[in-house]
Image (cartoon, rainbow, N blue to C red; front, side, top):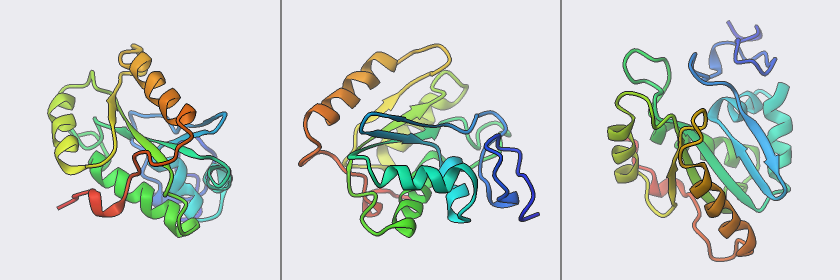
Amino acid sequence: MAGSNCGCGSGCKCGDSCRTTTRSATAAAAVQTVAVGTAAAVNCGVNHIGLGHNFLRHIERTKVLAYVVDLASGLDGNRGVAPWQQLRDLVMELEFHEEGLSDRSSLIVANKIDEKGAEERLEELERRVKGVRIFPVCAVLEEGVAELKDGLKMLVNGGGEGSERLKLENICVD
C-alpha cells in the first residue's frame, strides 16, 4: 500500500513500489567522488521521500557511479528482479531525476556472487550489458572487494574523462 513504510530499512514510505529484496539491505554510501547505491535506495527517491531523494541529490555532485546489483534477486524463490532490469531501472531513475545524471564514468558491482545460481546469472549479465566493467563480489565474505577498489581508484584517478558509461541502449532486458 503506497504511503506505508515498505520495510526496506531506509524509513521510506514508498509502499509496494520499493524493490528491495528480503535478502539484501538497502545500501547507499558516498566515498569522496564516488556514489554507490542499490535500486531500492534510488527507487525511493522517485517519490521524493526518505533516503532516495537525498541520495539522488548527492549523486548530482559525484563524477563516478558504481551501480550495485543483487545477483540473487529473483533466483530460487527470492523476491526481486533480474540484475539487468535493476540496472535499467537505476539508469532510468537517475535520468528521471535529472537528465544526463547517469552520464558519468561507471562500473557495475555484481553482489552475492556466492549465492546458488549467481555464476550463471553473472554470465547472463555480462551478455546483456555492454560498455561497462562488471565486478563480481561477495561483500559479506569480502571476495572481489580488492579488485573492485582497484577499479574504483582507476575511474576516480583517471579523472573520469572518456571512461566507461552505462547507457540504456547497452542494457538488453528482453
